[in-house]
Image 1 (cartoon, helix red, strand yellow):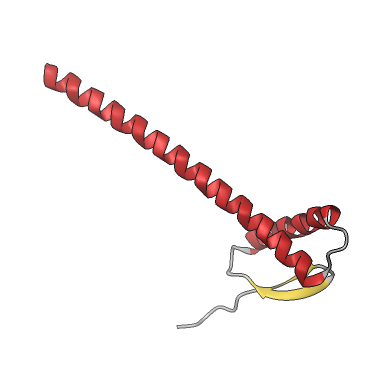
Image 2 (image 1 turned 90 degrees about the vertical axis):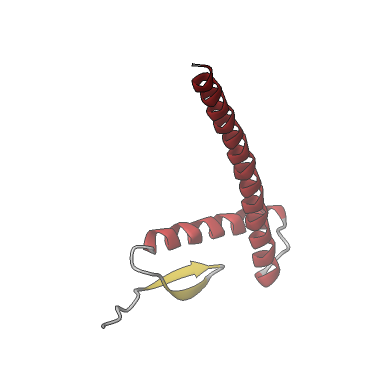
Length: 100
């Protein structure tokens, strides 16, 4: 069995280059993640112009994680609403079938 080498991608974050291995087919996902992180860093830097280095990176990462938690909560609420609608529909169909 031959293991295929993962391509190495060089990305730039806060002016530093990083060599990151991405599984085949995930290069676009990595590029989007780097773009999102760099955008978050730029937004955070605009809000807190005195932050640099690790403190800037940590605050930007926390902002991204916070947004992810909010999206997960919204997704869970939406899922619960749809599950309730499906359950109500199945109950209505079951009652209709039972009446006939």
